[in-house]
Length: 209
Image (cartoon, rainbow, N blue to C red; front, side):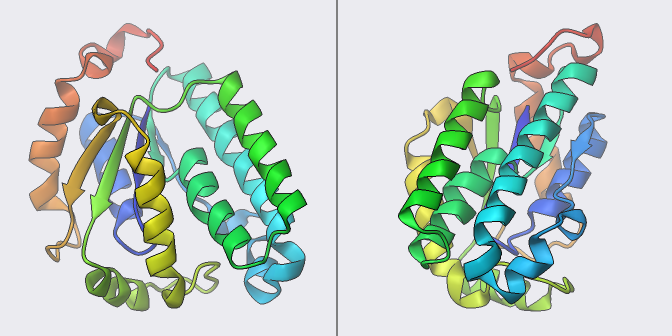
């Protein structure tokens, strides 16, 4: 499994879609519009953040399990780990989740991860905060759970989480250059990913962690 992660607005969704296309792998998209509590959480986060995060954690784990069961591999636009270490921690930090609610989310995340391994590699998109802020402001989403003012705190949380991973699990990509199609990133990224054992023979039907 390949998980494309990074701050809100940095370009995860575009790169994940292009990467899945180039590698001929199935994609697990974010699908935030379809989640039952997403819009309500943007309107009243103190009331709906807990339900929203429980739904997202379960949904992203289900997406992973589905890709593994049906294909053995795939690309995640964000994913379970980003939702937990990024947004769940952010909402707790902002007071949208109580200590008890956060602990329930923590227990759920740990149980879900015990049931299936983490992605083989996290492709981390990086860019200076002013660049991310500008891209975030241009997003055409009708409902944003995280706001522009949350981007520095979210980046700090992601840095803490990613710093705990093994170097072999992380592939950092400089996304500072404006490139709406991610064309300048793809060739080198695809070559690096194809060199990993998990992508040597994707047509064999074997399961790849």
